[in-house]
Length: 148
Image: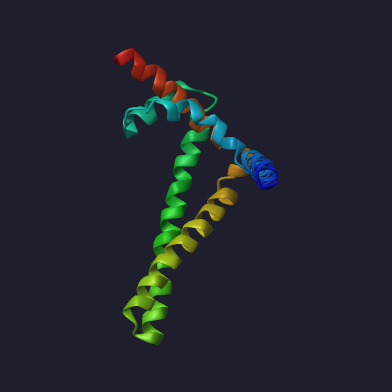
């Protein structure tokens, strides 16, 4: 009787796990674009390699260039958020650990806000930046294989 109960419990857990895995696989399906690059690690690339791709691909090049410009918005937001929240925390609490935590949190919030600004300013919502990044990695993989 104990074995039957244990087998049904394992069956229940297996079904639960499969449902859980299916749920998250659907939500992170965009990662399927990158799995072919994870199996065999790509060599490092430089800024000049990215510029070469941008110049060579008339479809995905401008999109990748715009996505790279959006990073500057994120960095700017991160710096402003980190410094301002840490400054306010230090002004009112004079607590080193509080100011440090505020610095980290402000940096993360500022990065997120900066990317939202970039999303609207550069109209990233109209572009398929994921496809452009995947196309660049495919281009880089083909170019790297040719070098070896």
